[in-house]
Amino acid sequence: MNENKRHFDEENDHKVSDKLTADLKTLFKPQLKVPPEVDRAVMDKASQQLVRRRPRRILHWAGSVAAVAAVVMVVAILNFTQGPALHKAVVSDKERKIAEKPLGEERYAMEMPSVPVDKFEREPVAGVAGKLAEDNVEESRSLFFRPALTVARADFDHSGRVDILDAFKLAKRIESTEKLDTKLDMNGDGHINSNDVDCVAYTAVRLDMRSGSGLQDALLR
Amino acid sequence: MESDHKLIESINKGNLDAFETLYYRYRDWVYNLAWRFTGNREQALDVLQETFIYLLKKFPGFELTARMTTFLYPVVKHISLTVHAKELRQVSGEEILDEMPAPMPKEVADSRSELAVVISVLPDSQREVLLMRYVDDMSIKDISASLEVPIGTVKSRIYNALQILRQDRRTKDYFIQ
Image (tube, rainbow over the protein chains, first blue to last red):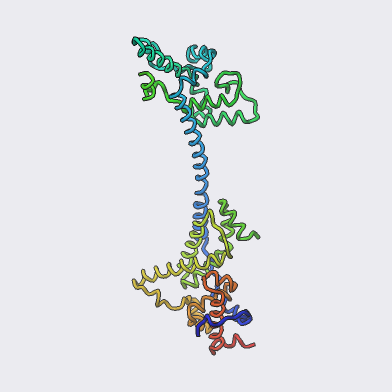
């Protein structure tokens, strides 16, 4: 008989004696003991599997940091490449004076190119081309009037280099309610605020002008 | 006692203690079921581990839409048959899964229980639902969901299995009122 032809709405048809149920359980559900090694093996797997999720959070965080760093870097590069117009507005006379002081004397050390600025003036070019070249030299020079931090001062995590994490660290300190040390005034404007964070961030992502990089060469040509 | 759904919610968040609770809640049930399918304690222990490793891989993001036993039953069954078949191949080198006798555990055979004998000669599909219903205490609905067969089919399989037991001289005493 086809089993599908039998339909039973009443489960009473399935009622069996307690003895049958008990005997079935005795036969097919014995009291088996699971060795503790098996429990340990399963729990070890579980801890590996569940703990494996944590690094993802760190990765997520690292991704955010990398994204912020990338944005800062792009802004910094744009600053370099479109610098002259921006810099003329940004660099004040006061900053220029501070920048001209010897390295280490002030909070800021002026980041000057390894090639003397005189080099720009050594080979004058006559005519309109010469004028344009002079303008370019002026613009290029203005790019270097950027305050740069000494590494030791901004290296909050003592990693030996100033990186974007130092900027985050400073930002956290500024956001906290604790009293802030005047040493945290990175740009020397007498205030400890987001501008100081920007300053550290810039230092973290700036291209080293003394390294003979392609950009440096491009600017000096 | 925390519900299975709450535990699963916690495990999805990476809570190891919640997993431990869930493991101990279903460990013995899984082991027994695996033993029923394989008829071998060693293999049943392998199945137990494999089942929970399979479950672990579902996290995070696991959502329990039925009872835990309804979810675990087909997993245990599948792994058991795979493990058992693998062992058989290693022993005999032959594909004898289809010829495999009713999964009557050795311990059961040794008991020479007449009930066990009658149960062992039941068709696989009837024996399976009978044990799910009266040994695992699963509802008709849960059995239907686990085996992915209609409720009517489950009911008729149970009915037919009980009819065989009723009519067999070795087990008819169980049905005398």
